[in-house]
Length: 191
View (cartoon, rainbow, N blue to C red):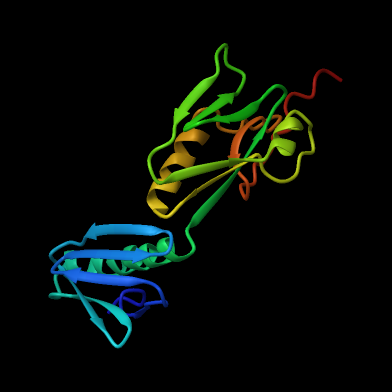
């Protein structure tokens, strides 16, 4: 039995869960999420909890058991509290600006990079931190990606980070706020 898959998922108040075969719909104060789980899993709702069981003992069913339970648990968490991913940008002249549903990133290229925000995802830019993005010992974050779908929030954060990943000598670039970048010493010159 999967240690994660066998754990029940508590349904918080003000959250509706509808199970129609393999299709699970979760509706809460922040929105609605839907997902169709694989045929190897069975979703059961009982006593104010959701249980994800597997329909056999095949290798595929065992592999997907913990994953299916985690996906449903993330749906419940998303519609109640949502997910956030704080991001940090560091470098002289590196900036982030939000205009409507477009995030404009100046990251050392000859042109600014524009990222269209997908539906259901919001970005909050910290103007004070964005103004001091060029300082060497910057603390905090420049912008936060928010949404109810954990996968969509993570995908957008990864695609924004891929625009200019942090480089290993000065640490310039876009990174997750909790990410630690190991800096290299660089060339020491002749002695």
